[in-house]
Length: 69
Image 1 (tube, rainbow, N blue to C red):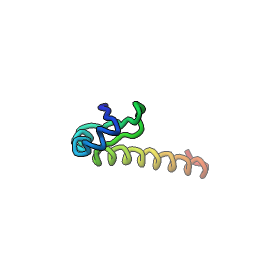
Image 2 (cartoon, one colour):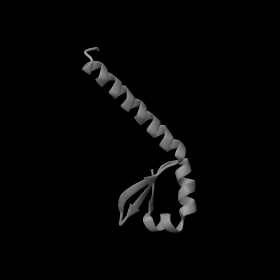
Image 3 (tube, helix red, strand yellow):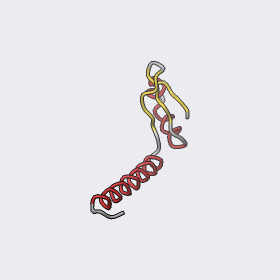
Image 4 (cartoon, helix red, strand yellow):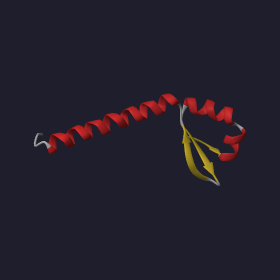
């Protein structure tokens, strides 16, 4: 994963967007990673996976609570 300083991200915001559309980019402040910028498509892929996992866990919990398997 590529890393940019906060200063480079600020002054090269267009470049940050271009890089993030290709792959997630870490932004570091004082040498410490603080955020990750990613494309909308990657965000949607990650949140869709999270929603499926959450939904599956909720359904299994409800079955267990109802006495089913």
